[in-house]
Length: 600
Image (cartoon, rainbow, N blue to C red; front, side):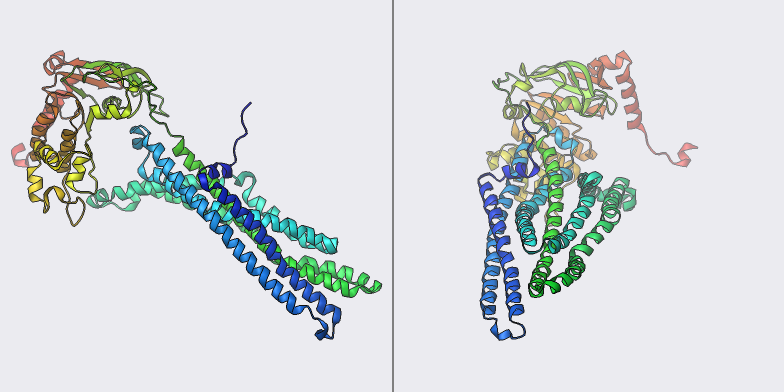
C-alpha cells in the first residue's frame, strides 16, 4: 500500500530541520494572540452595555475605566504575542529557505555536467534561489495568519450565536459570500493557474539571461530587442497570464468579496429592524440594543479575518508552485556512485557498442559506436555538425551516462569508477572556455588547488602565455574582468590550456579548442598542444581538418554512427565522406575575395 502523500506545507517544514518546532510554537502564539485580540472588542461591548443600562445618567457606569484598561492590556499582549510568534516562524522560514538552497546546490553538484548544458543557469537559479525565497512568505507569515484566523473565526462563530442566532447568522452571511468568491478565484480550473504563471516566469527568466548574454551580438549586428523573438514571446506570455488572472479571473469575485466583507454591517441592519418591534413589545429593548451593539462591533472583525484568509491562501498557491520548481531541481538526475568503485589502470579509452539518447529525444545521438584509443594515442572525431562528436567525447568524463553499451577508461567502465577519481584522470578543453572573475593564478589553480605559484607559472609558460602575463599590470595576480582587464578568445583558450596542463591528467579531451583563435593565437595554441598531449591519450574534436592530419586514428561520425575510421591517408584514399570533407576544407582554405579586375 502506498504511503499517503505529504502536503506541500509538510514537505517544506521537513526542510526546516531543527527549527521545525519553532514553526509550531509560532503558530501557537499566533492562535493565542488572535484570542487575546478579541478581548478589546468584548470590552467595548461591555462598556456600551453599561452605558446603555444607566442611560441617560452616564455617571453611574463605573466600569468604563476598568474596561478601557483591560482592552489596552489585552490588545498589547495580543500584539506582543503575535510578534513573538512571527519571530519564531521567521527563524524557521529563513532556515527552511537556507536549507532548500543548500540541499539544492548539493544535489546539483551531483548532477552530470551535461545537465547544465540542457538547463540554462538563469533557469536553475530561478527554480532554486527565487523559489526558496517564495516559500518564506508562506512559512513566516501566511501559516501564522491562517492558524490565527481559523481560531479567531471559530471563536467568533461561537460568540455570534451566543446572544441572538438571527443577528449572528446575518453577520456570517458576509463570510459565506466571501468564501464563495475566494473559491471561484482560487478553486476549480483556476487552481492550476499559479503553476502556469510560475512556468511562464521561469521561461522569461531563462530567455532574459540568454538575451543579456547575447547583447554583444545585438550591438555588432545593429539588431533591436525585437530580434530576440524568444525573449519577446516569453514577456508577452507572462504578461498575458498576469493580466488575464487579474482582469478576467479576479476582478468580479474580488469586487463582490470586498463589497460584502467591508459592508457586513449592511446585513445586520435589516435583521435588527425586523426584530426591533418584538423587543419593544416584550420590554427587552435595552437588551436588544446591547446585543445589536455587540454584533455591530464584531461584524468589523469579519473583513479583517477574511482578508487574512485570502492573502494566506494566495501564499499557499505561490509556495506550492515554488515547491514544484524546487522539486524539478531536486529530482534532476545525479551521477550514481558505484557501491564498490574500481581503479582504472592506464589511460586506454574504449567505446564498446555505445548508444545514447538525450532525454526527450526520439532519435539516438549515438548508435552502436565502438572504437579504441590506446594509451598515448591521439584519436580525432570528425564529421558533419550534429553527427555526435561532442556527445561521444562527453561520455568519457560522464557528462552523461550511456543508454547502452559501455565507455571504459583504463579497462574499467566509467560508471564503476569513483567520479572524483575519473575527473582526476580526464582533463578537457572546450571551444568556449570561460574564466572566473579572479586572478590568472586562481583561474589556472582551479585545476589543482594545492599547486604552488611556481607550478602555475610553469603551466602558463608551457601554454605559451608569456606574452599575456607581460602585458598584464600585475602578471599572474591580475584580476580578470576588472578595470578593463579582459582577454581575447584565443588568450582565454591558452589560459584554459594552462589549467589542463597543470591538472596533468592522463586523458585529454579537446573540443574544438582552436575554434575562436586567430592565426597568431592558433600557432601558440598548437605549441601548447604539443606539451599538453605529450605521452597522453587524446580525444580531439575538430572541424579544421588540418589539425587532425597527424592523428593516430580518425573516427568519422555521421548521424550518430561511425561512417569511416582510419588514418588520414587511408580515409582520403577511400574516397568516402572524409575525402569529400577534406576536399571541401581545402577549397575553403584556398578561397579568397577577388577584385572585379582580377575576375576579368
